[in-house]
Length: 313
Ligand code: SER
Image 1 (cartoon, rainbow, N blue to C red):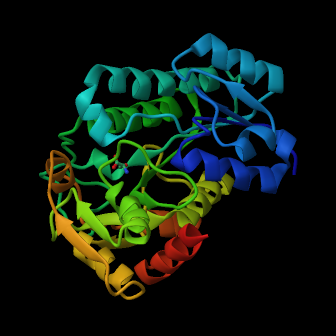
Image 2 (cartoon, helix red, strand yellow):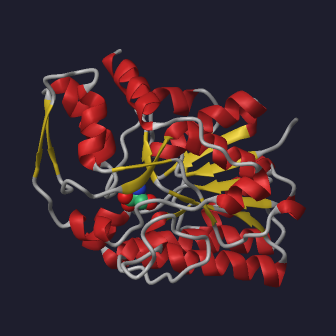
């Protein structure tokens, strides 16, 4: 199947892997990667690459017209921890980039959009365990407020203008190919790197901080299944809850100690603890299961095995 796809924010943690999987699926030339900066050699050389600022509507429109783009994956965003430091820059990037692609779709210049939301849309008053799709949502972080507003705008553009926008609320994502940047769940990636480099890790979240997490392969599969799903089956146009595994720092540490018995963890919670404390511990994703057949494949043990094996190389 031929189709022309643009990834905005292709050099980030999700974008790099998503781009390569989509290139394998649709052909290298069909998937245009773009970012504000150049990423890995492999990504930039394996297919078309454009330097692109996600907040610049005219620049995105040029790329869309030039390559006759049909689908856009908007992966550019400022994550939770960085957004607390630069609230206005986060709001500007996270919202304006979304409006740019929503308006391109409204103008019928593109046909379909993927936009990631996050567990950060939930807040301290949300039920923590098996957080339902529809529940009290009072996000208390800059990032969460931007994602919650974004979800409202996605649903609005779908209802009002028929825009085919699809979204999931990603949990913390664990991957070895590209480092995450500026998130609160980043500890769950750092811990593997430090276990192999130093045999010790000083964790910025406290023991007992249980958060929803997912291995990147599952996240990419979820993203592409949702984009492939029959539009008539989709009942959620804000963003789907998406779950896989949930654990606290001491549990991921234990799973690493099963492979590296001498690995030591200490805990020094910083400002990110407050962010983590406002988020759910586990997610009810029954809507995603029912509407488009979502099922995760990686538990914590399998994730740890994959991470350690690949990082060792
Ligand atoms: N992983 C993100 C963060 O920690 C949440 O979506 O900011």
